[in-house]
Amino acid sequence: MKTYSTPVRAGKSGLIPCVCGCNDFKPALECEGFGYVRCVSCGLVQMNPQPEKTEVIERYSGVSGKDYLSYELENEESFLALQKLALKDAGFYKLEKKIYNSAGRRILDAGCATGSLLAHLRSRGWNVTGVEISPCAEYAKSERNLDVRSLSLEEADFEEGSFDMVLASHLIEHLNNPLSFLMEVKRILKKNGRVFITTPNISGFQARLYGGGWRSAIFDHLYLFSAETLTRLLKSAGFKIEKIHTWGGLALGLSPEWIKKPADFLAKRFGFGDVMIVRAVSN
Image (cartoon, rainbow, N blue to C red):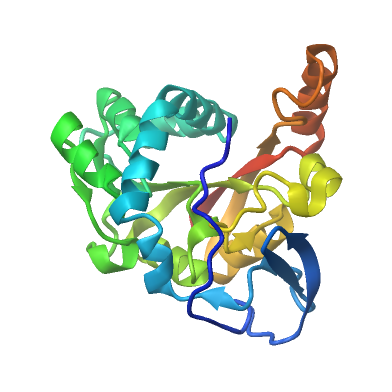
């Protein structure tokens, strides 16, 4: 399926230090109308100069926000199926049964879109909450009667130790300050709480094959993580990595089925898939 992205456009932007504090970068990917650089210290690939936070938020409000809602609704069934498979690979359902099986268990979905995953988790006995800055939040509240805050995670200001688990699917690559986000996740998690981060994998086969034409090298993605750079970021926020899984060898429609199936199997088996999920525990 096509990755959602707003059009490339000029806006206020400025060169910022990498999340590791380094100010030295080298070119990484040249895309149509924009590009990415790589930090020479930690290797994190990022858009830098970077658009300001207000501009990023505007991409998901107004007319653009309505387009994004339509996109999410159109692909909702497929997205939910992929999220459930990713959580299964990362051991979510085993943890749910063995550890997080109390009546008061709480879970937060950061960037919950239309709330389809939250509704699924509610049916499994979770007390669910979401945060979402786009018009999808209103849909989740009105159509699914979900507790979804129309705020960023940092602005929602949840109490310390509020949640057993936090999920963030295809969110962290959009954030101006992913380290600040992870530190807030750490604050609101209970001791030994888990976070599940799903994001494109720049070390995957497709990213290496297509370079600047990779389907996840889009204007809306401010950061492109590898397992190594995301692991480093999670550790700096106080997490311990428990599991990393990748999937997606070749995109649907770009190769015959007899090639795609073994490519997908090998990508998942050997960790060079197009997308990854990382499970980490709060120390």
